[in-house]
Length: 307
Ligand code: PGA
Image (cartoon, rainbow, N blue to C red):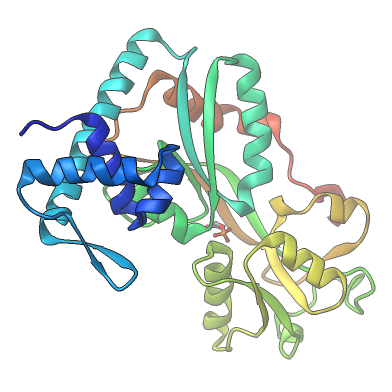
């Protein structure tokens, strides 16, 4: 077959978006240019790679095969790039990291500290929830992921590097704000603002309520910690969030951490990569930095506030 890498890259973008228009936007090309390259690729395979039903674009069987080989080729190319990068050392290179929004603040601090020592390393950070992290790892679209609860999966190498306590938050005016060792039972009947399905925080909360044989008290569902904190602050309910997401709110005393028996739910942050992934020197340097030095660059918000 006489195909070019450019054709494969264009095909891969169309197959991923199932849209010629979005692929063209992503690649800064015109739509006719994208269609032309796909047509030439189809000329080489002798089979159509896409079919259009109504307004929607689908991969044909040949298209799915092409997507499979295309990913393998791209993967090999990235590996080759990583090998050469390794030969050049850890001072240069690019890191693709996937981060749950819950750990965003923490990871930004770590990146800032790392970049000071490695100014030529560049980063792409994908911020998502636990489900999104698993998808990115599975698709081999990130070098490293930060996770609250890596799956028991032999394909992944997960190293814990920091505690991740989940706490109950309430508006500062809440009647239990100053109470000590509130029994868990007292939270029954409270309204909770909870994270979306697919969130690791929500999973941990679900497990706690399951263990009590209680229904998860979903008063309102929100897809970000920021939204939850704002909802809690104005009295829409209690929230359960990672203590790492609280900083300014505690300092400004807009919300408080309730002292509830059984809390904090103690979890840990892990740094994760795929076992077969060849890590470039820059990626390895960042991983080691996180494992050994994270604690020196970040302190848990609100620790003093609880004591
Ligand atoms: P999340 O956090 O709730 O933002 O998905 C990740 C995790 O705690 O596993």
